[in-house]
Length: 102
Image 1 (tube, rainbow, N blue to C red):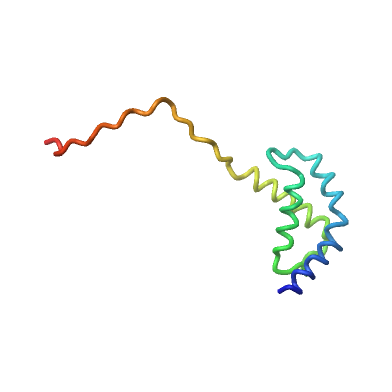
Image 2: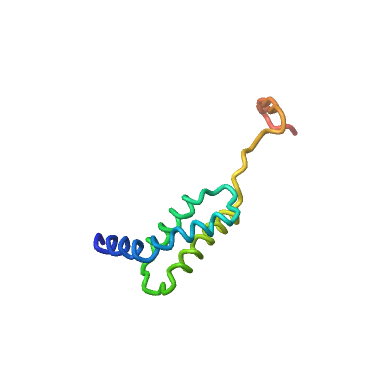
């Protein structure tokens, strides 16, 4: 497992790291509501690093760019968590009657 991790790190440093500046420049031209470019890049590396194999990736720039776009799409697709605010003061609770009404 350790050897796989080192091999994946070498693959990323040879194939993705050199194109990272280009991906960053593309992301700067893209509207990313609520996301930082560094977060997108970090998630891109994490997703690529977690792949079972990189053998099928022939076009590293395109793959990394598409991964970054998918991260942005996922972020936009998922609804944001909105805080729940009460509409007014809560009504006081009434004790339950000892016997149900007839």
